[in-house]
Image 1 (cartoon, rainbow, N blue to C red):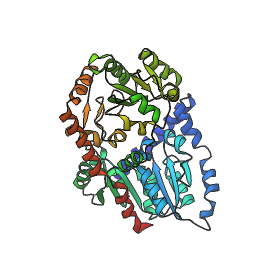
Image 2: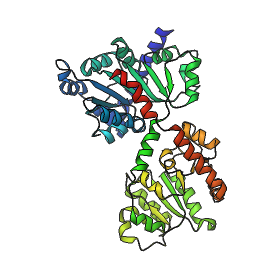
Image 3: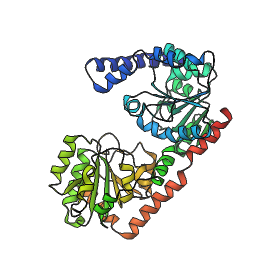
Image 4: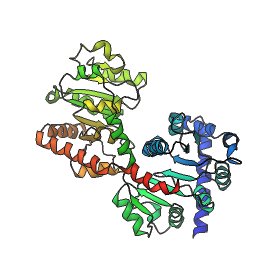
Length: 421
């Protein structure tokens, strides 16, 4: 069964990587970056890590699929670097959306794309880099890399992991996947459900550590930026902060803005895409009742405007401090975006129906800290519900309790890694 599974895995990954190259040939932007980023990568690696042959350094290799996974591993990288400044950090990404944004990340000594998962590539990569410890974040299960690391007796850890019953690990045909789990020295999962699933297949090297992103967003909230002009815009009004919005979310925001019931409220909206066309679209949608964050300092006297459009990046996480309620976009598309950032300020959070991949969302909906909506009507109903002081207080307390109970994952993992440093 394992041999057949390996053959299927080999064929699947070969087809997958070929499909990416074909997409790049037909000018798919992300695929082109994926291919270009791996061009001559082994020559670059050999040049960069030539010192490992004669004068090896202790390198911790972190691998993340993309930007979201990086954020889950980020606090761990930074704490390890702070406590052990002599340690070198190699950070790799599978996706361009992670690499392109974090290729100059200050706490990593080197940032690279991960070469495609083939047996030759894995053997060559590990021979060049010679990592002392390896940390994969959340979902990364590349058989050839894990197998090669295991053969070379290099300890590998999986952090911030989430498992679901429908995954192959827990199916009759999932022998190869289960074998991959045993290549890890230890797995740190986010929740008890994942813990119990691993126990059900006799995997015991597992600890419930929680989600390191919680430590990250709490640190951001503690170091938040203040914006005097935004405070002037708010002027004591209740504030709805809409983060990472898509057109479907913005239609709901428009219907809410039009509702006479919520005339006393103001809206801070940060679109997922801050390109000029999208910002202009929002300005036209709100019929002259908006200000732009980038020019707010020049218009603070115009506090009668009810909508502030955030046309810059990097400020949303701090802007939640001005909110009473948060709405997170993406739930009418593929998935919701970051709900933990507003939770760091104890805000009730609303979003569309696509939230099932996020443990905090499932838990918080059950505790009335989050609310899922499927239409403008249901959004208006939930907002009206949250105007009840007792319901609002119960919601904020549920969010606060969740954050307090689940912080500390970073330290739990670092403490476990100390024996290997």
